[in-house]
Amino acid sequence: MKIYRNLSLLFAIVLMMSSYNVSAQNPLVIKDGHIEIDDQRQDAVHVLLEPSPKSVKKALKKWMQNQYDVDVDGYGFLTNKDVLKIEKAEIPAISNKAIDWNAKIVESDKGSEMLVYASFGYDVPVDESTYPRAYEQLRMTTLAFLEDYLPEYYTDRIEEKKEVIEDVNEDITDLNDNTESNKKTIEELRAENEALRAELSDNRTKMEDLESELQLREKEYRQVKSTLDEAAESNK
Image 1 (cartoon, one colour):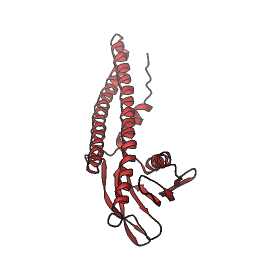
Image 2 (cartoon, helix red, strand yellow):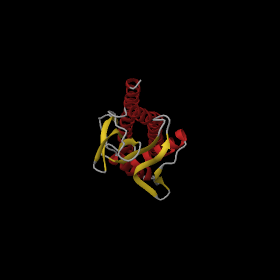
Image 3 (cartoon, helix red, strand yellow):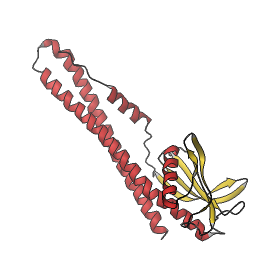
Image 4 (tube, helix red, strand yellow):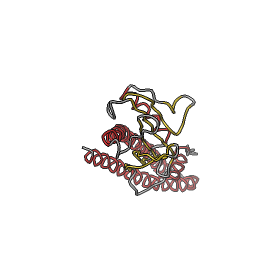
């Protein structure tokens, strides 16, 4: 009896693993930075995070709209600009004055680089030295977004990895069952059994790699949570 296996899932796993850049570095960095706007240097909240720019922009736009009932330009249907913009809007969490809010989100070797900055109009940037309270609130709103967005992002990634592991486990079970069944057959099945054993060995190796990757993702999640907690504590 010939046994035909669908290897598309296993090929997908190999491609996924080869494209994933495993890094021991902290997957989240939050710090004060700067950005050049019309040759003028101004303060910005600088964040390095793993999700793609598209994912971050989509989540940040939705979050700002839900939190502050504002119009966010720069991302949407047929629009995917580097900078999200809110012009002359009231964002009480930052200031009681009308404010221009911006978030530049571009690709980086870590995933995404985000610079959040604001102004009270042309040539009136919200800098830490000139508007310390407004800048601090800008930092706090950025942190609040990350606290809402990143835990769910990492939880989803972990669940996806667990589902892949479950699929591979099912393949291993099927391969074991087929191997045991084939042991009862005669000489003509020996060659097929050898192929099944080789495939089973490959699957076990992939399983070990996937479990190691899952442990890494869970470690990254704990690092991200710790970074958020430390940032929240330091900004109290």
